[in-house]
Amino acid sequence: MTPESQHFLEELKAAIEGVLFVTAGNYPLNVFVWNFEEDGEFNTSKFLQRQRYLAPIEAADFFGLDEYLDNYQHWGVSSLNPSVHMAEKKERALMYAQRADKFLNFLSSHAVEFSTYRVVKYDLPIDNETSDRSVDHRLGSKTYESSRLVIGKVSDSVWLAVSSYEDWNDIEYETDEKFSSAGLQQVTHQIDERLQSIREASRDLVFIRRNCYDAHDEAKKLIFEVANSKAAVIDRVLYGNGFIRTCDFDSLSLQGEGMSIACPEGLADDDSYEKFVPIDKLMKSYLTNLKTIFVGTHSVFDVYFVGQDFAGNWLGLSTIAVWI
Image (tube, rainbow, N blue to C red; front, side, top):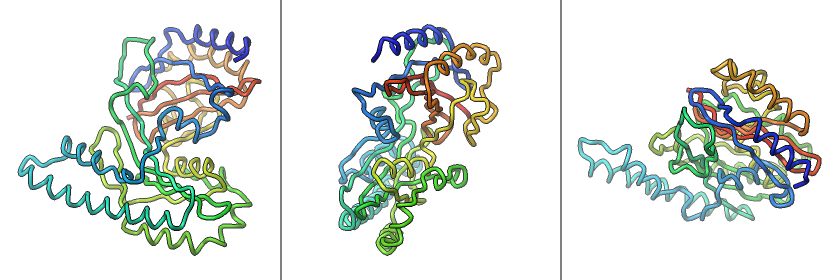
């Protein structure tokens, strides 16, 4: 890190002291640093993995049977006849896990560089008093939401990703314009038959998802995405199902950000705007390619305001927004 960037970070830390990001819950702003020399190129895949939103898992644990049953036993067992209810749930979960294994075996025979992931966001408790605590979800002890993702290379230049999505993400997030690739469109017709066979093999596939503290539930709606690289297909599928969104940075107040579900009217507390003005100016004076990143699909979002310094580092702020 250059002395100039170190000085900027010190100024930024001083500027946010005592400032709360006010939505349905009040959270502080923390300094965010992506050091190019240590972390490499900044992209969605690397960002999500470093921040522990995207964690590789063994294929044998892809369905997450133990996680699903433990969570369901805690939250969802009927009080009328719990032993029978749990036995029925376990029988159905085993059937879903067997389907997942069958699909993975099929996909592994049609793809190389095959990998499976758990997509997860942990939660920190709302605190309306302190402004000096961390908002790093990696410190959270509770899973706020989670899902599964599988990726494979189905030809020399085409990667496939499969995950799940919820009803509220049917319309808002369109990835075609942002991630379209002429090269990809030229080759996809050559593998249409293979992709169609993979879709057919997933017809009875059920993923598990956990949303907003609820018990894990069966997710039967799947999203399929293809791209020219592994990093790009992770981008497409997680933008496509709404887990991550980005827009150009305008202000910490989020006015004019244009996010379709993330508080289009901005913050709940108009008094915060004036506090943000010097912070906005400081970030715009030193950083380029400024963007706002939202992580999460429902109610509680991790928010990053970041930009690039002249050495290629990505610097900025992180916080949590709650919109109910």
